[in-house]
Length: 213
Image (cartoon, rainbow, N blue to C red):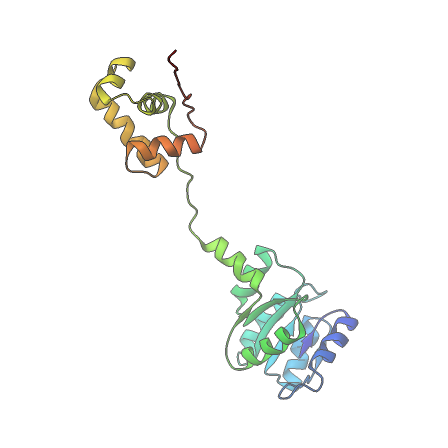
């Protein structure tokens, strides 16, 4: 069954399925209330459901169908791909979520998949869900000004004792600063820390050259 409040859309979708082996459009509806009535009358296996419709919208119709006709599989077909729309539809129990720019082959395959008990999602929707569910990584903190002072001296070839003397701190404090720098830059040694800091333009070490006459 095709459910959409625009007759031209319903006509276009019917044309996509006309003559396709194993698929028959048994009903059409222009809103959620009509969809419920037609579902009772025709018992479709799969419903292609628009989301935004007057009266009872797509999600409301899906929720009612889930109670009255749990055997019917519903695939949302809409132009809307916001997180809110997708979340509401998935929470209502749809078998799929496709966008109206999907090619005809994808729509035909989606109906077959849904009828067989599978689920279908548009690639764009899948990507959004992955982005939404992926853990948010907290950006690593940048080295502090003091840590960068230590790293600049290290880059010039100073040993820990020399860094400590220049900055009037203990060698233990120098080692602590370096440990923090390694963690923040994702490295495990002094040379790699200098390279990483220079690549990120956190420090700049002038090239000193000399000549003899």
